[in-house]
Length: 296
Length: 315
Image (cartoon, rainbow over all chains, first blue to last red; front, side):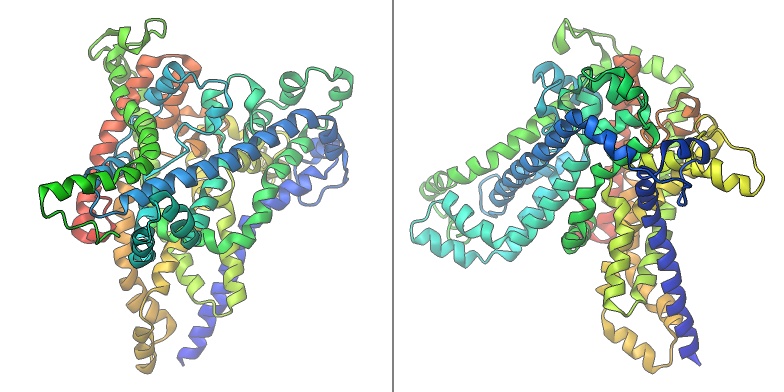
């Protein structure tokens, strides 16, 4: 008698999860369709899953607007790669250092890290210090340093990985053989830590790719805008790309800008890398979330 | 190696042991310097809430004004509105986040086909991976007055006039809550699911032998077993109720001034006062207020978590 109720439960699980999955996918589909819709159709009919007239205009205009977009894409790629690499190295180094239980003062140093998770100065002092003391405004470093490079949580995750998953006997015997600490770290410890490096690296990479607030806070000129900053400005001001970023183009060409569909096309090229990479690394994302949310 | 160096029996040996650790301190140094600059300097920088900041005179040269900035802040109605909004939204998000996260984790646990399980999990995590900027494109495509799908395609079906979404504050508590759940439910589902997967299978086998249905097993085994996880996450989130997701409250309503009564939270208020209105004093006062009350709440929540399940506390 239970089996029929069990079957109903399984069936409704499938139905509800399918609906939820669709709710997560359809907005992306709407973006894609919007980018392939004729601009006048959007004006008349609105964004729709079933547009009356399709068009490739948006992507043709992307080619015209390509200069600032390619630059922004380059900034995004550079800050993501450089920022993630730097972040991983520094996080791993400090996490490794803190994994020595008999390091004199290690308790205070750990507290120094943990306290940053409990208390922070917030936007105003951070902004004042980065702009007034370090003069980071309108430099590429604004997209890499403030608030992004390290966080206490990742450091503590690294530390517990080194403590629990790297057998002390391996590093110990290397030391007895006369290996230097840096050598042990790069040649022995890091190669054994690929799972945690991949997990934290991916989460950090996505954070850099998606970062738009640093550009909003610290950039008043468009020179170092990344894709997210371009997208942000495009949404608020549809003519942004014509006015600010591309002065060289004649107004004529751009007065016909199919703004409604171009917007969606730019949003698409901004998310496509994440969407393509994600399914292959899904395992690491899930792992990152699980170890990050409830500390083990 | 860790054990080898842990025998500082005599003071003389201790000296060599500190020397031995010099390379290790050097490895800690870059990270420590960054935290010092990025996290600790701003903590001390909180004092600017008590100053009349003038960039020409610098942080140290600016004059002390005591509680002036706070007096200004708390005599406006803004202080009350942003506190109310921040707290109410967070409470709604926490409660609904648990309900959705746990429900979907339980549903996911009913899926026996490995491929489908992975597919569902992959898809519902998608919204978590895109920025609020991209998500604001979704809401724009749905809600835009002239070109939005809701105004153009859905409301006409019911014969309802188009709604000017970005100027009507009354809709935004619902819109923001929906968007928050939409972006976050996959994430919390994964968290609770991992906790469900960790439950000992023998409980279920025993229940099956006794003839319990899956539904009974859910209410008698699954939910009681993940209760510690739920409580821990609840407390940790309650500790963060003075902070909010800046992107959700700034980007999704497109910074529309007409909506501030229901979309302004402490984080957006601090940002707008600093960057758009240029009132550093007011902004610093609101930021100070958030940091201090936020700190007390985080500490309080962690003290309780330490009582409930000590391994999950931050300190």
